[in-house]
Image 1 (cartoon, one colour):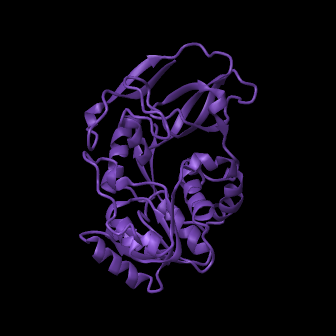
Image 2 (tube, helix red, strand yellow):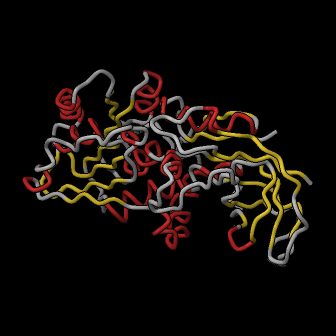
Image 3 (cartoon, one colour):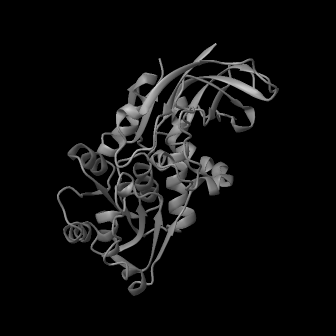
Length: 333
């Protein structure tokens, strides 16, 4: 059996060019003991993958040039040499950026059966949802009545963070760009604020209008102007959970930090970065709280879908243009 997969030909500077991604084919070897073969149905592309294209070790190893790339995926087991997994099982794993994955069974998880679409485990019930829940609850200690600000609020993580905060009884402000994304936030009873063509001061003023009583919790996905504006509106004792800084991922030179970082001192605030995989032991707690909301239709999650393995790099690059509403996915034919 053959597998088609993407490799990276060199590490990019700035925004990656499409031609860096090479679609290759290999004949898979016979399964070894403890291996499983999976036909992927859905692939995930995520902003953190840009960090794996630097050649540097961050919190995950970089992609190896010329080797199959990796990422979240869900699919069906088509062959197994592990008694725990059988043909037909729907599973999640990190053997993405390919159509057929042959990997160690130790890294494969059978999908929970909540009666939802399988790709939900790459989005609302997967890493993005878990990231939103972790940042709000375990990092920012979000409480009912808090005033919450979320940047990139229409993305895979942000759109869940705003809804989980709203469900807690918080006043929630969401930062987004395009008019349709702002309209979606408003339909969720989130106060929408546009970052487009605004300086940090202007964005801070807009946040103040949307939340006159200040901000107690910030869920930060972007950095840059968004973070500087957020710092200007902090209440005393505010908590900032930082899960990403997409504003700087394609920068060719270092980006200066916020000019008002001293607000952390003035407001006696706490800012903490986190990596969701460090908290994965709490995934069952997340599912217990969030899965029933998804099943009951209480969470409005959106997906932006590109079709065909060959379009995986285009789906990834579109993340940096803000082309996605909700989770960006690739559906395999």
